[in-house]
Image (cartoon, rainbow, N blue to C red):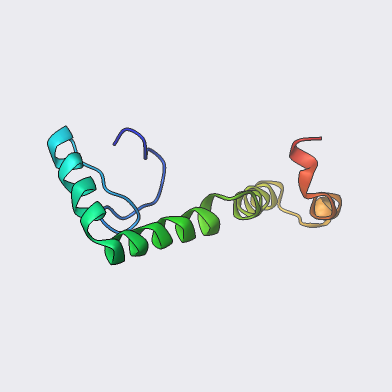
Length: 88
């Protein structure tokens, strides 16, 4: 789906995805009418992004991959001390 490629989301829980513009418009209108549902979706989407796609979990997954490929954790001590190592 365009706009959510690569994201691990649940349609209807974290966002609403549809092929047809009319379906998206209907889902949007339904959310505008239902404050409680809107808040639940907003909170679920925010939690998903913070837990899976914010810098800390992304860097942790990158570090895990690096550790797996390298086969050793000892050489990464400096990277853990400097989480900005990828942008330095």
